[in-house]
Length: 603
Image (cartoon, rainbow, N blue to C red; front, top):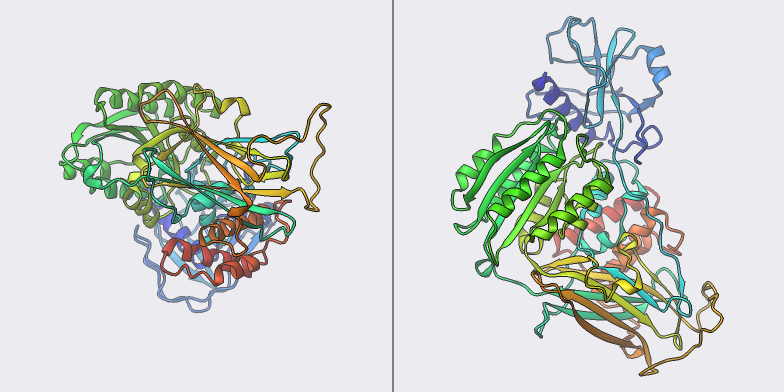
C-alpha cells in the first residue's frame, strides 16, 4: 500500500508539474476552507514515450497533452471514465503498472485490490463507483478570514497601534498556489507577510537599541489622492560565531497526513540542512507525534551531526494527529535542557492538521500562551498542499513568541533555516509594538496596509503585560500607511464626536509621530522610542526600498481583489519595478516572475 501511494503521489506530481492537474483548480475546486471534490481526466497524449514508475517518480521522456478536462461526479459515473488517476477494478495488469491506451494515461490495479474508502492523504481519498476506483480530491486547507482595514478619520482615531510581524508564510504559500497554476485563495493573502518576505537595505542600528528606525514618504502609486508612508526597522546583525548556544527541540508531525513528498520528506531535508549549521555547544532533541508522542532524541550535542541526521531520516508517517501531547513533551524537553542566556526554542514542523486532543485554534493558543512563560520560544514551519491549516499554525507562532514560515521547496528551507537562521532563531527584541499618532492639522485620514490580525487596542501600547511580535537578528520589518492630507479629495468617514477639537501639540509642521516599544528577549519592562515625520521627509521619486515594498503590497491587494486597490494591476507593478533592477536578488527576481505570470492570467 505504501509503495502504491508513493507511486500515485509521483504520478500526481508529474501531472501537476506538466499542467494537467492543478492543486488549486478553478471552478471545480474551492481553494477556501470549505473543501470540495473534483474529478480529473487527462486525454490527448500524442507523443508519450515512457514513464519510470519508481518511487522517485522520474518524468516521461517527452509528451504533448491537451488541457485537462474537469467533469462533475454524476458525469464521471455516467461516463465510466478510466482516465487520469483512475483505477479500473477489473484490469488484468500487474499492480502499479502505467498504461497508455487511446490517449489515456491511467494506473491500473487488479480486481481484488482495495483502497479504504474515506482514507484521506493530502486531500485525496479512494472511492468506488460502478466498478471503478477513482481518487476524489478534497481541499481541506483552512485560513482565517481577513477583513481589510479601511480609511480611518484622524479626528476620531488619531492613534494606530499594532504588533510587528516577521512571518513570511503567506507569500511562500501563495507562491505555491501560483506555480501550481490555480486560483489564489484571497484569505491566504496577508499583505504584511508579502512585504516582509523580502530584505530591505535599511541602515544598521547605531545606538544601544537593537534596531534602527527608517521612515520614507512619497506619492501612493495606486491612489493619486493619498501619500504613502513607510516605517522600516532593521535589527542588528550577529555573526554566527558570536551567537548564543542553541537548545532546540524539533517537534515533527509524523501523522498520516504528512505522508506525501512535500511534507515529511521535505521536513527531513529541512532539518538536515539546519543540522549542518550546528556546533558542539548546541543541544538537539527530537519529538514526534502521530497517534501518540515519541521522544526520538534527547539533548544531543550539535557536534554529533550523523546521529541527529540518522534520527531525522528514520522517521515515517502514519496514524492520527495528537499534537497536544507532542507540544507538551517538546516543551518538557526544552525546559529540561534549558540553556541560561542561550536560545531555547521548539521548532514545530506540521501541516497543522491536529485532530486528537486539543485541536481548535483557541485551545491551542491558550496552551502555547501558558508554555511561553517558561522562556522557551516557538517557531512553526508549515508544509504541504491540500490539507494545511494555516490559521492554526499562524496562531501558534504568534502566541508562542516565534515566527511562522511556509516551506514549499528545498530552496525555501535553505532560505529560512540556513541563510536567515539568525533571524529565524535568534530573538533580539520581543513584544515589539508600533503606535503612530497622526496630526489632525495636516492629516485627515489614514489606512494601515495589512496587519489586520496584528491590530492592538491603543491602550495596549503602554501595557507591558500585552504580548506582541518578536524581531530576530538581522530581520527587517516594514509597514506601509496610506495617509490622506487635509487637501485630498479622498472621502474619510466623519468623526461622530461632540467635543473633538483640531488641536496640535508640539511642532505644527509634523505630520505624525512613530512610537515604538520593545523588551529585551529576557526582559519584562519595555523601552520607548519616538520618531517624528514632517513633510521634509517627502520625496517625489519613490526610494528603492519603498518602491519594492509598495509593489509587494500592491500585488497582495490585486490577488485579494481589495476594494482599496485603486488603479493597482500587475501591469502597473511591473512598470514600477522596471527601472530599479532587482536581478541581483533571486527572491525579488522571482517576485517579478510571479507578477508577470499573474499579469498573463489577466490580473
